[in-house]
Amino acid sequence: MIFALSRSLVLSALVMLVVAICVGLLGYGYVANPHGLLEWSSKITLLISVTLVLLGIRPVFRVLHWLSFAKYWWFPWLDGEWRAEIRSNWPKVERMYSAAKREIPKFDSLAGPFTSDDELVTTASVTIETGLFDISIEITPHGTDKTSRTRFVRPRWSKPDRPELSYVYEQTDPNHLAPTDTRQHFGAGIVEYIAKTGELSGHYWTNRNAEAALNTAGTIVMRRVVTAGFMTRLLKRFQKEGSWF
Image (tube, rainbow, N blue to C red; front, side, top):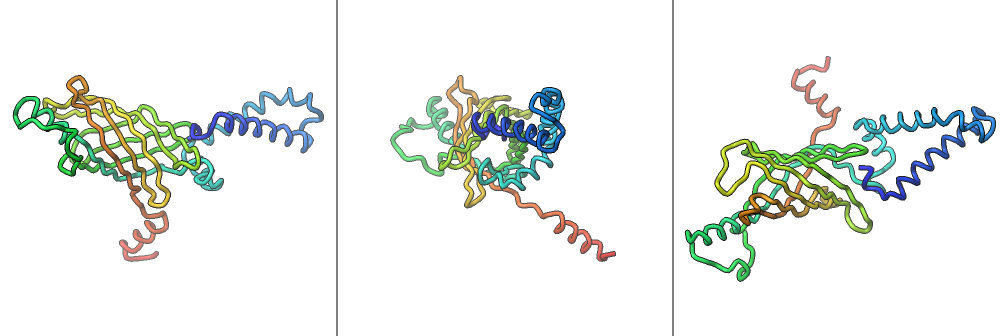
């Protein structure tokens, strides 16, 4: 998630951290003069390294993100389970493929509007894992063994625009394939975080069977799966057991 910040802001934060440590050492008398800071250079480096390691632990980073109100000035916390609705233009691509083989009458794909008959709607489970240095997304379409895993994710928030994620993913399908499909393909997408609804919404496109001009594109909307909190789960457990003691 650190890449959602500009380089200048990251450098400024590191400089401020080093300055704060130096001022603290001088202020509390651990160092008699600025020259003595050189003797502490290795310890300062170790302290910064330990701090970064701790922030690399997801629960620790989550607490810091919450305490610092980072969702307002850094980037929203997207970690967790989501449900996706994916709309693909595959039906229209398939019609063009069938028309090229003369299995159906020819048609002009630019003449008419894009209708609901021209898109395929599927649902999927999505898992987003967020850390200080990386974000990963895994998408599993319902009713299939296909899995999409991101190879690259870049957060960006350039106000007043909405926070957004740009990503590149790889999808694999271990099952029997249709002649128009491939066992592996790559794709990319851009989704925006809509604070009012808590959704991630945007577009994606793939290179699936691009050599045959069968690559697809579409839209994706992800909605967070709301899970019960710790106290709620504890209360339900006691109620199920029928006793508080």
